Amino acid sequence: MLKKIILSIDRLSDAGAYLSAFLLIVMIALIVTNIALMSFFNSSIMVTDEYSAYMFAAFIMFSLSYTLKENAHIKITVISSKLPEKAAKILKIITLIMAFSMSLFATYNSTFMVYQAYIYQMRADTVAQTLIYIPQICMPIGFFMLSLQLISEILKVFCSDF
Image (cartoon, rainbow, N blue to C red):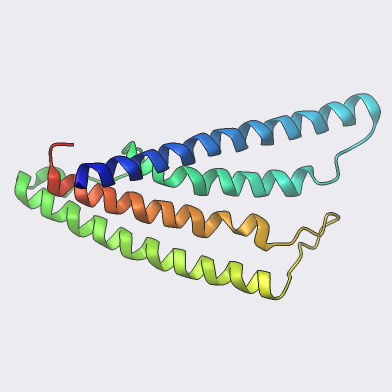
């Protein structure tokens, strides 16, 4: 049962990585198209900077959980590398629980931020006047995915055969 939960969460993180890769490709295509238009036709896609920034933020948010799954976040192991295996495992569980708490806090607050932007119909102060909740929605989704992946990592420590 736990293995199914872990594998499901890991698959969700993989999906986030694929979505991030897609957003990166679209962002690059938008920038390259804008450069070509400016170079050859003296024209521009007015929303390139704005939408590239939104896609970059989404790229980061959707790749957080995958980065954790792949053990690619920067870690300082000065203390844990010197501890006995059992103590290191306990320390890892404690740090994962702390990270989970912070991620839940970020999920809640970013959800509240998006909700307020939606209620007040806040718009970007740009040419496109994008409804700001639309690009902001990636934040609570990304933090929620990170929270789920942290649960998966905690379960992996308890299962130890992953």
